[in-house]
Image (cartoon, rainbow, N blue to C red; front, side, top):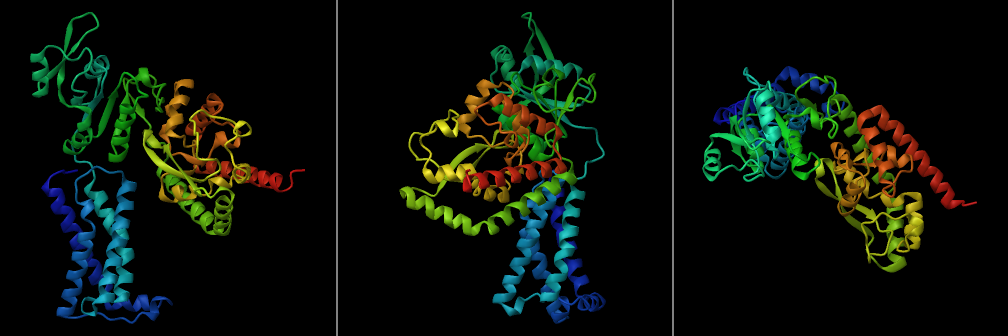
Length: 478
């Protein structure tokens, strides 16, 4: 992918040309006659413009669509699914803008039939155009090392078969600082020098490209294909921050085999000098099915449960006049955070991060106890699923304050960060909660290893059955 002005020129020119062709095709008499045979489209009057009116229509459409696609003109590496989603979003923005312009100013109105016909065309050709622009150039793979462990950096630099462009590490790290003159030479781009364990020095034949904060800039500027992670502690925030950057930019991530048991890796080749980190374990088909199911499930739930939502809100207000919703910061993929909303089931005072069983918690209100028993307090999380912060199935999103306590109990707790958190999951249907973090982690990691769309459907079916049983017990306790 070209990352300079040629990419911007090609992307803008391609959008303009494709939009112009789409408008001309939509105004073709044969195409409009064929569209008129469709019952719904037949009600729209064909109004193909001519002369100056046609020029104005094409120019207006090109300007509006090209303006809507400004976010895509930046030469930034993206995953194919992200390109498609963003292109579709910007297409709908442009179509609504054109419809709005026509509504308020008839002079610049694009005929409704033309607008309807160009929309599916643009939804297909524009994503394909940007995916084609994103294609790899005919060149060797470009890789960098990112980390804070000088020993690993030196070992990877010596033995890696990848063409390494350089490495990123903190400005000052233990045993990699050297003398002031050595540090100055590295900051100036000279090959780095790492201290060996025996007190000697070994020279790296690659340059230091900067600190960890420059990772995203380097990924774009150098059009990086692969990042090799060399962190002393692969469960630290910096490690997952680097993974997050790789995920967002569609860059492959690798680690040294010594850390292959600490992260989610591909162990198909035990003799490999570097192993792949599976930063996106879902294949494209399963990913699309999963996201589609998330949207359908959450939207249907919010609509169908609307009367119950109103009733719960009234009951909470009548009990103690307190707030209806409870907001809490939860941990998401790669350690990022997002706000989760639930129906308030406890008194606001005295919140503690230590996990406690419901039977031992005297802060739970009377309404809250019913909500927890029937799982109805979870309904507002459907909004988080619809937004894309959560999924229907996945490891339970944990309160950020509680996360530190659970990490102390189970050292590999952060493996759960490799997938999007869920409303339900394998741990939930097996009644494993944060009170027993080891059991919970065991089920969560089993889900991470075995996840698939079919597996999700089985978990959802079991969870719905459990909810039904709990509701029946709450209504008829005998």
